[in-house]
Image (cartoon, rainbow, N blue to C red; front, side, top):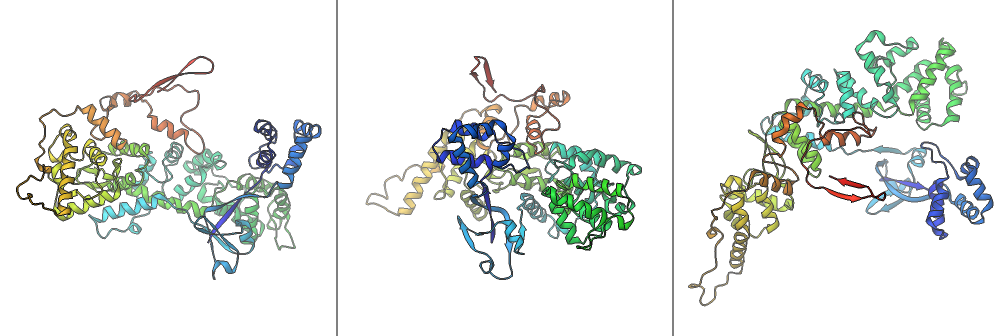
Length: 595
């Protein structure tokens, strides 16, 4: 069963909730709530707030309404406010879960009525199952490759492929799991990883807290003589990470090897550190230094470690353990990162096709990966009614767009097109297509978008011609389909015309749309430029001037740890196509432009 998580009434939130129920003006309640200190990582109660904030305390003492508000809020503070489903948490039991804990339903999901901490205290096993899109990408890439190499197995790829590591060291990380961000790419280039262990360390280090160790880590990685250990017993524990504490497992091992903790005892300290239980940790310092007879812990002193050295080591662990990463988790991610890098390096077309399919609902990412394909010398072939499948596929000339990339085209209709093509051969023309697909989910919007995206270009007709006639062709095909279904033949049926057939609609003799018009159509129907790009003529100039890509700027600011290459207040020169602009007068009567 999945685990329920309880949102509790914290100090600010409970004041706002009680104020709402008491029908107090929102603005007044908001002002009171904002006087409660909001310290990330620290649990501030209403009692703490009254003690720490003089203005709030004065208001409480002189205003009866505020006193009643806060007194009521204090009675409710800390109580569950709402219940939701833990996204990945699952409880695994030997017998049916209801024999151990009460169950409930959140929507259609069966959940335990106890939270994570209570379940663990009861001795039940809680596992987190994380879904990774990248595992699907790898599986899809393997299936594409098996069309040429039926015996290929992902498990057989070498673990230390020099070309893959050279690609990572060169910063070609676009599309590589966990390595795509500007910051991660920078660390990758700086470290020049040589094995899975190095990739594991990069993944664990690039987080708030451990990031401070990155310069030292890189320096020691390239200059082994600079690696220093506070005590010789630390060398076998920290040698793989060049003397830096990176993983939770290293913290556990230090407690075990230097102070004689059991693995279970060491793990309890690690958990206390990760949750910053200050009182417990100060008590634990004494046990680490001098031992604890009740728990059979020897302490560092018993192993001949000077007290000053032991204090230094404990301080380093204390400062770092809140952020230390679980190595088992980091290694799992590193293996997936390496596999995606290997595939990108050696089977680029198959990997990029699978990657593009996985991000079809994100046009920005699709555009970014298309640019990466171009940089790798891979042609992106436009959607084609006779060659495209639903997803991106690999052809000799490059990667073929999937029909699902075109707006207003349902998957059911695409499957019907593929099935008809397989059963009766390629479509010869638009009328042939409409006749054969009559009775499916085809509609005018879908057909128009197929034409505008260029899916019928291979039939030899111009898009301008097909846009002129597609409604007539579709109507004729639909009318013929209805007649065939009805099977009716009135008294005069043998002599009367059955109406115009789809094949009888002739192409008008008109010029094709301009290249710019075709690109605009593609952008409207797929969110992308397919047959070219308005910036193509300027790419070399832009590259020479080192103008940053807008996508790279946005990506840098969207990083979890904040931007690394750009900064607020920085002036940038950009190059691009202006698709829309508007002006707006601000409250200060100045003019602002949105471009």
